[in-house]
Amino acid sequence: MPDMDEPTAGAARSEKTLDIYELAALERGARVDVQAIPDKTLEVFEQTLDFITQEGGAQHESGTASTERLARKLEEAPDDSELRKGFIFAEILGGYDAVNDLTRHDSPAYRLSLRYGEAMLSCPLGGREQSYLEEYHDALKYAVENARDYYRKTGLEGLTVEEMQELYALVMGARDKTKKVAEILGQNLILRVEQAVAQLHHIREKILHVEQSLDGIFLVDDEVLFIATTELRGIVDDIFRGVGNHYLAGNIDGVLLLAARNLLIEVVSFYSYYGKHQIYQLFAHDRSVDRRHVTMRIRSEIRKILNACKEDNKLVLTRIMEDEEENLDLSIEAIQCEAEKEAVDAVVKILPIVDATSQSVQKKGWVRRLFGWLGF
Image (cartoon, rainbow, N blue to C red; front, side, top):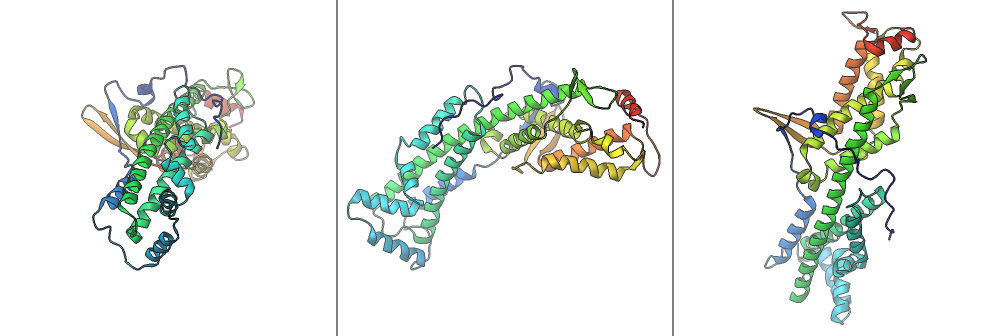
């Protein structure tokens, strides 16, 4: 069992209050509704409880291998009532570890989960603590899924009324523990999304104050502007892990999620053609490249970030402004599509792109001067 981690460096919430309405490009009074996500884990618990309380048992094939296996296990069970219950429940729930976690109110795993919940009040949990909570949550769900599947196959024939009642109480207790752990996980994911938005905002602020030097390296306050790939991938992971969580969907401010969406598009787009000096490399030996070539390079850079994301969850955000409503996907696919379009449009404005109608387009602002220095 892992010990409590120290707070992760930089994990504390940003002290600066962000204007999420501005980042979401919304006027005050507008709102963003978040699509509800069903709690599939809770559905498993409710279904299992219904099965256990059905009179006469659930429909199952009497005499199947599973029923015969359970009958043999019941014959092997110890005579002592407490030992017998432990033996039987281990068979039904998937092992003695599951029985211990469900029967003990002071289960070490559950106590540690509550400690993590208390620690989260000061700063978001780190990846290690979050992974532990997810594993414990899945273990509780797995135990009850075992009970449900066993009941479907055997009807739990041979159990006494007292044992059936105790099994029902175990599933009820597991449901309560799982709901609490899910709440801690969901609250932590909301904090991590808030933190991700603050990180994206910080990068965006640098982007907006970009200056240039004669050698074509982008500078901010005399420092090279560099968007770390690992950091950006971590931000994307945090956001999309949260996007798939039912607690987050039911409790987070939709305006914050829309702000996250907008910032992701802007930062990922910038990363694909400015942040690593991609355009200079692309055009260093060719003064005119067709739009398709540019699009493929940008798409490749965007995919390096987004395809590494471990989660592929999706939420639908409904932006509501006076008499207007619009649905927006918060998904990897939507971010990739819009970031690519934004990046290509920006490049077309600053470089000589060959297409069917024009050999070049007007260059603007500091980017025009920069590429002039580079010989374009």
